[in-house]
Image 1 (cartoon, one colour):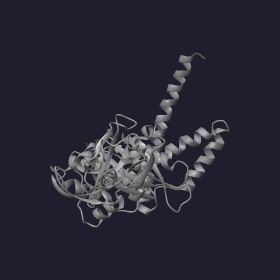
Image 2 (cartoon, one colour; image 1 turned 180 degrees about the vertical axis):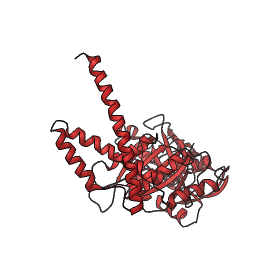
Image 3 (tube, helix red, strand yellow; image 1 turned 45 degrees about the vertical axis):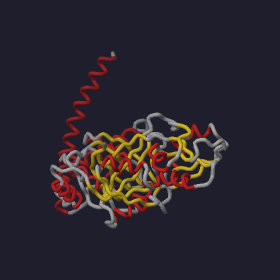
Image 4 (cartoon, one colour; image 1 turned 60 degrees about the vertical axis):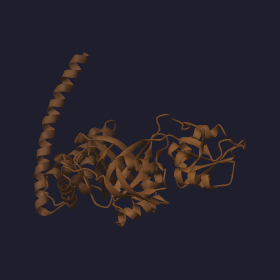
Length: 380
């Protein structure tokens, strides 16, 4: 057969497939209504397995794997369609709707008490002042302190670094997310300008040790690799490290921090722009204890635990694709105490002010082992 003849045959088959698929979805609708009346769950693992076994046997060895993959997708589409037909009460959906209504026409307040990790001059402080024109800031030694301050109501908001364009995710923060109850209400991208600084500008003593935050050291790895004689020491925060150097009597000690820290603590810049990349940015999130969704919110973050079985992650990604959601990031972290099982973090471009997206959140909540809506927010 000629290529055009083969393609015409495929087109005819595709038309038949679409007609049969729409008939199958109509039957799925009837199944959903029947299950709703009897209270049965949407998913029936045993029936899905029986269908796959029957159809793969009929397809033959060559096509069996493809039939199995095809029906995994068909089952997922059917479940998604059935779920959209169910009238179910969702505290999550109701809570999001209430948050949207309560912040209509508003934005993050200009005055707020905000928790940050580190000390004056920290990058978190700079991100905080971008989000809040007139913040009162409480500083904490560790990221856990920021989460606790917000969760216990000591501060209305908290600022935390979540990701760097060079060094990647701040895993400490991701791991702490599991242990605390909070919502993301805003985000700020901040350009990071690392400099090498010491106490005495005129000192001829060789620098033998540099202190800074772990992320800052990683972001300046090429500079440090070129100076193997310099010992690297991790501290809680770049600003804390700058303060430590300013108060030290050692003449061989230096810090990697921002120009703001040099001005604040009276340090002298030895080398400018030592980061691996000139376009070095860190993403900071603003968290609160209460769910707040402002009108300009166009980004959603989720945390999911999925069933430890083939296709579980694909099912979620497929639902997002069907809804036309642009997935920006997918991060996985090990679940403590569970062997080779992972928690997934999703960032996506979407807004829960869209009724279809709000309904999607309810569907995902119903079908995940554990579903945490982290927030819908604006990122500047």
